Length: 266
Figure 1 (tube, rainbow, N blue to C red):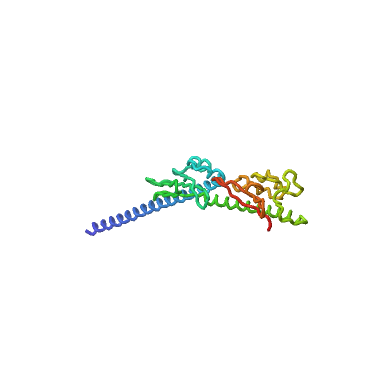
Figure 2: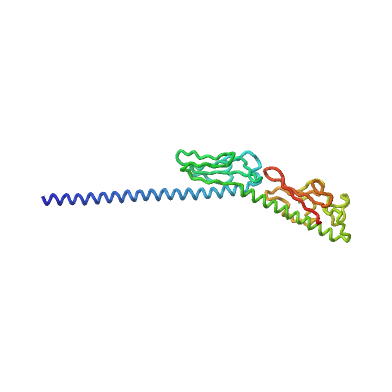
């Protein structure tokens, strides 16, 4: 009887050890699966971060052209232009041309689809609705275009200030200080006197207007932030009566022009 009880005790110990061993194995398997899942999630997030940087770089390079057309580029164009290699079934969608604060831009969504993926970018609004299991990023071109617009305004302003400075130099170098003379253009266009600015009756690009040399303009300001020329006129759109002015304008990629005026000293 004592021998049988001892055998039962041994079996109980063995069963306990087997149970503990099985729990350890299951625990390690669960931990390994979790580590593998976390590692995949980290790798996918790093990949999407790299995709974001690549798409932003492509958008910046194509800033002058991308929002010119109302037709959005297709996903293949985005991937090719940004140099993104497709991994984990990456999907890309591009919105239509959107407008905010008079600035045109697009939204690009890129995502790694989950099971039964139904992620969608609304083309007309740029709103992205991801599926619960998807990993995703959204890139907007608004900040890039807003920065280019601000830089273009700054260049126009600097040109206007330089033209006004040239006007004052010509005014104060004249002993008569005659304020009724328009020093933004020659008195006789066919025969300008030394130091007078040429007559520019229609808009022409600054770099071919003769003003860079005649008015001492910075040649680096001859184009806007998108690379298009800044044009100048002291005829059309300019004031030929007091206060005299010279007109500056430049085209924006999505249409329309940005304008500014250099105005004579009071």
